[in-house]
Length: 71
Image (tube, rainbow, N blue to C red; front, top):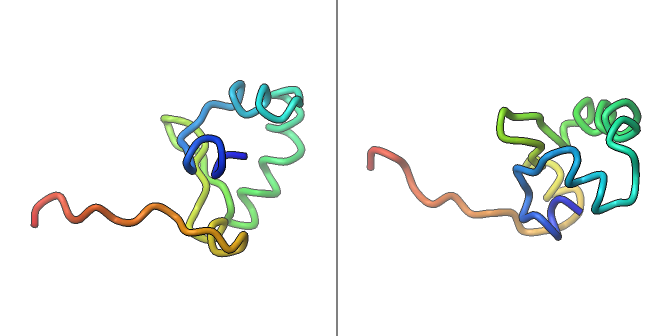
């Protein structure tokens, strides 16, 4: 859902909960720890983001790097 609906994130936990029809607390306590431990999800100050590993695991093309800041 984060990849398909939110382009990989960042996205807030409440938005994720609404999108999948689950309580935010359940996502934080049950699903999120597993996804973080497996390296598929990361928590950032701006929200949850999927990792390169998640894109690869699902066979999806992730966002391409746009270049370097000081190139």
